[in-house]
Image (cartoon, rainbow, N blue to C red; front, side, top):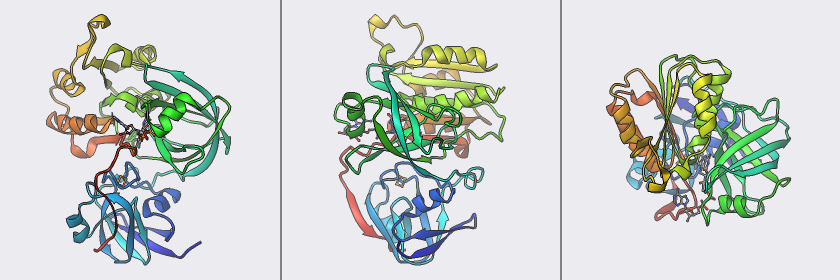
Length: 357
Ligand SMILES: Cc1cc2nc3c(=O)[nH]c(=O)nc-3n(C[C@H](O)[C@H](O)[C@H](O)COP(=O)(O)OP(=O)(O)OC[C@H]3O[C@@H](n4cnc5c(N)ncnc54)[C@H](O)[C@@H]3O)c2cc1C
Ligand code: FES
């Protein structure tokens, strides 16, 4: 074990101890402090923060898209890549007061594959049973990192279920990329009964339950998983909140969990499911919504002021959804999102650097 240093976060006044071998983000997660983050790989900038005091900070490999050189020189840093070698003070640029102290400590766990079933032509439902420990506490909407056996590669996947408390189960919805390190392994080689190393929970894409305003969910692709978890948790709590789930897919063959979502319209008093196809095949005989999910949202909603919005899916969808929601009146701080950034894509500008606050 190497030396530890104190990291103080402002303006929230939280202090944690961080071992030199850990990133600040990881140390915070282990101590139940939920800081804003996305990829944890230095690519998305969700964890970008400002160094108020301290100079001896080393950054692991990151993308200059996430932290351009001029920002690094001004004193910005990426907490998912930062190792500290002295006591430092960090100003959090994005944090959620409701969530920051409510974190659950992360666990290293081993889980066994229970089933792998297709939910669309290119998405699989993976169910794992926890072996050790037999339960991992998580909030609906959070995710785990799953290791690809025999490598040091991990990938993040959001739980679609709401708890592992009684069953020990974790359910995931995973999109298969033909050359995807994890997803093609899942699709072609992983078998029932095999064991996977997983770690978590991570993430702040969780339902803000202290609020009782209307909710808009906007999802695409495997973004289905955490949104399903949030909606299922609303059923468990017998929520009466008005909620509409806009889900974007290309064709009919990309839709999943249709029967369950239609059933949830009956289980929840004011829940509406609005699937939309951006490229319906004539053979689809589709009489539902057609178009990009953001256009469908604009057609259905004229004023979303006072509403909480939860957005999840591929980065381009999330990036298009945020301004669309703002234009419709959703406050920026009430738009909660998880971008499914991928780590396998080639990064044109990865760098290793030393922060110069
Ligand atoms: C917080 C978080 C939660 C996530 N939750 C989920 C989830 O619940 N379900 C899920 O399926 N994924 C989720 N992801 C994405 C997931 O972690 C992986 O990045 C994704 O599954 C690809 O991993 P892979 O190893 O299969 O492919 P990689 O080996 O990473 O990529 C293989 C190839 O596929 C290409 N590729 C990768 N992604 C895309 C893309 N979007 N479009 C086109 N080409 C692409 C790459 O360029 C590369 O050439 C999440 C990501 C984050 C950050
Ligand atoms: S979480 Fe740090 S750059 Fe994405």
